[in-house]
Length: 519
Image (cartoon, rainbow, N blue to C red):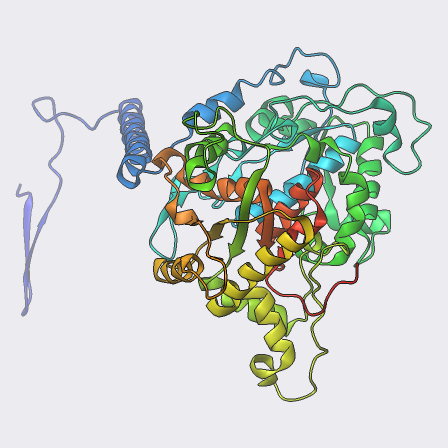
């Protein structure tokens, strides 16, 4: 019997082979059994998983080495070992503690996130709940810890909060509050019995341990706004107090505020934010807020650029001085800030809230909008006012710096002789600014500045380069006088901290004033 059949056609030939029968003398191995095939499949999957894991781990290590972006492992380790990260602690901490986690800001600048961190941690404090502090989150990409920006620069996807700030907000200190004041801080709750000391802040990672998913109670922002009767444009103080009252009254231990962010950009960008000063002015949220050792080390290492030695017999400072006498710090936004400035004009925006205190000497009061065509956006007195405040020219910057120096001397008798420029401007722009400020002007006396130092002049080690914005703010906070950009959250936060630290309102200036403030 033949086991080969042959088929043909006019276009091709095809051989078809029938399977030979299996008999006792057949020496071929039978097909592997199902269990053995399953074992092989499992081994292949395990090998593939291990290979992928090795590639990911190698990439995450390699990307730091390639880009020179720090890992912050020491700070992450410090946060993980905070003493309040202990399930056996007594109430209101530990496994039965009271905590609240808020919707984080992500993908924004540090100061957009910082202004929100200050506000929501204040709510947590008033609600007698441990604040769950977030890292600074630029990207939520979980695959790589380093991301590339549009300008082809690399940066960390996330940076631990303790790389920037210290104090109770970031979990490395206890809240120092008066029990009576704390219990009376929320409207309508002055008669409550004494409450335990506020629980300390905990990290995002510890939240996952102490508040597993099955214990979490979610509070939706939009629904709760309706429940609490918070209307659009409400005073920010009312928003803080109503949310604190709501969260304080809840018996649930693990509360997660979900959905939208609790505060909007409009809450921070309008004068109604000033209503919150009644709460924050005496709050440990600001009183105990300090900059991290990493940020302080940048200023300490560059003090010689900003201040003369304290005496001829001393080579340098033993500690960072409380105030940097004779220093004028200025904040100059350039580059990509032109479009936001035009948007402020287009939408008739006000100064950021903390830049709007009525006792500041410079006033933002532009001419009313024109009824003419849209071209008036760039060629009207109103447009000129907005751009002077938001994006001044080099000539306007030089004139303003010299004017503020002269006015400060007339008011206080103190001399400003050094300038620190926190900026993202290009080096060519800064070189010309330095030349103009350090060149002696015509007159009976030399009115040039002794030194002009910029962000780019600071000596900063690689491991602290990403927190240099904190050093900018620390210098602005300690400077004798500060000129800020009224539309900037960075300037706004500096002015908030300066005010909390007792710096006189007259020392906070801006790039233009539409009218003279009446004393």
